Image (tube, rainbow, N blue to C red; front, side, top):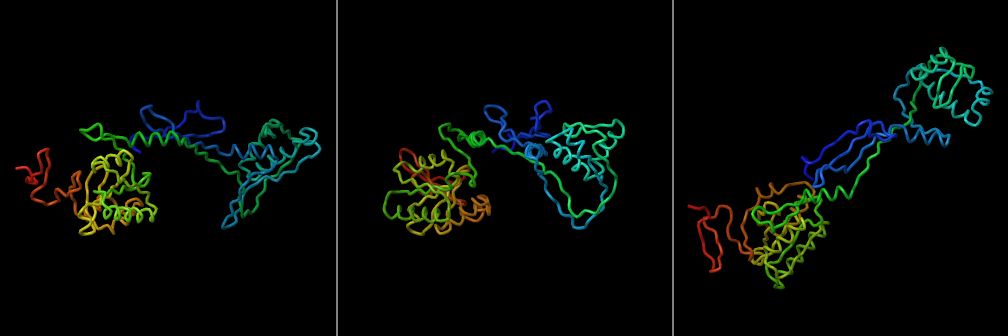
Amino acid sequence: MDPSRMRFRQHLKTEMAHYACDCWDLEIQSSYGWVECVGHADRACYDLDVHSKKTKTPMLATQRLDTPKEIEVAKLKFDRKALGKAFRQDQRVVSGALEALAESWATFDPIATALETDGKTNVDGFEVTKDMLTWTKTSKKVSEIKFTPSVIEPSFGMGRILYSLLEHSFYQREGDEQRIVMKFKPAVAPNKCAVLPISSSPEVNAIVDEIAADLMESDLSTRVDKSTAALGRRYARADELGVPFAVTVDFDTLKDDTVTVRERDSMVQIRLAKSEVTRLMFDIVHGRTTWKDAVKTHRIVQVNEDGETTGAEGATTVVEGTIRGKFSRPAEQI
């Protein structure tokens, strides 16, 4: 995903859901414009408070303190007869709400002030009068704190995210609009590696199967293409599917047990022992090394569509082919 085409946007108060005290969207830019793909809502204590009221069951968490401390609280004494007459079956809800506020004088002080001044106050939608309770300010030693946990709600639009990933990964080779590439990172590419034979001979195919089996044994999903299409065409097929690497078994493999590994985006190829392929692919996919590091430690080669090595780093000449045949020319133009 292209980080420059992603942003976080905070909701305005006018568009906030009734249950949220804050909300942020992750938006991704695509051909449809900026599209919300992930929503993060801070629901605070709304869910547990509502559930607690409906079920008449406290939904509290407990935090134990390493060292007990003194806190100021309100000690309440209820007139159960007055509460029962006023609230009937809801009297436990009202007394529970008042007791929760009384756990800290800082939260109960506004209630006490309103009762002293106006003779009544509102607690969770219930009108409480001064004759229903008495209170005294006191202190107590506590070794734990009870609180209602807040809830953070993340919501992912997987269809939108996957579409954005596909669109961000799509591009065309410069100078050739027919060459389509999906630039998936190795970690998320459905197929991590393609294994291609240069010919359909049994000897070459046996090595292809050996390498593919070794890769899949290490949980690296592998695509094998033994079709008779030109090697360049098979590279293009792998590029369209977003396969980040292609291993080619060529005629040199039969001589020295080496293969070429091609990187999809740069199309740079290196030659290495076939026994090193699985470890290199595994390390790149799991972020233990990078393709840039591999290029520094292995020989870079150029391979044409027939699978022939036509040049290497430091070579004085390269081989080029035309409709009339093949010829050598200086590696660097004079």
